Structure formats: structure tokens, C-alpha cells
Length: 142
Image (cartoon, rainbow, N blue to C red):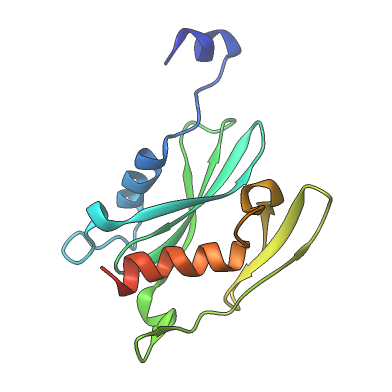
């Protein structure tokens, strides 16, 4: 823990590489099939106290919440590649909508709805395209 973290009384946010490695804590992680060296992560939501990441490996999409009020990040959910890809294409519906001036809500498939995202993180590339690109890179181009 850094001196600043100690003085603030909380840990720092996990780095992107640490978030990817944290996937190993998932009950769904398959070390015999998943190569995390080719995994990538996308920060979708950020406040002063929490961050939400999507991690895409060759086999699964994970949602990880890093809340500074907790001891360590938490894996909220994951979904297998089979529910995302069919016939060599990504067929997962992703839809977003406005919530406030700074945040929106994104639905990632029919089961993972109403996830907050920070609009400022997606000012150049829409969140839907960013998520599709993440999965394309790790699940189809791996």
C-alpha cells in the first residue's frame, strides 16, 4: 500500500493487468482452456470509489467491480463464449441508453441489464462498439 493510500485509508484501484489476472478467482475460469495472455479489459464505469471492468478472454466475458470500500475486486458475472458467438460471429445484443448527464445504462445480452457506464469513457467510440471490439479481438481473433 502506498503512503497516499495509507493516509487516505483505502487501497488504490487495481490496475488493468491486475483486473485481468483477477479472473483466475472466478469459479468459471478454466485454466486448461483460457489463455489470459491474450485477454483484454475495458473500463466501462468510473467514480472516485468504484470502477466496473469487462474482461474478455478466449472463452468468457467477465464483469468485475473494483470498489475501494471492499478489500478486493469482485466478479459480478461471466458468460461463456458459446452464448456470445455463433456461426463465427458475435450475436450478443448490446444496447445502451442515457441515465444522467454523466452516465448511461448498458444491457449486455438479455441477462445482464442496467449496468452503469461513464459517458466520458466513450466520447469517441460508442460503448456498444467498444464491447464488440473487445470480444472480437479476444474471442474471434485469438
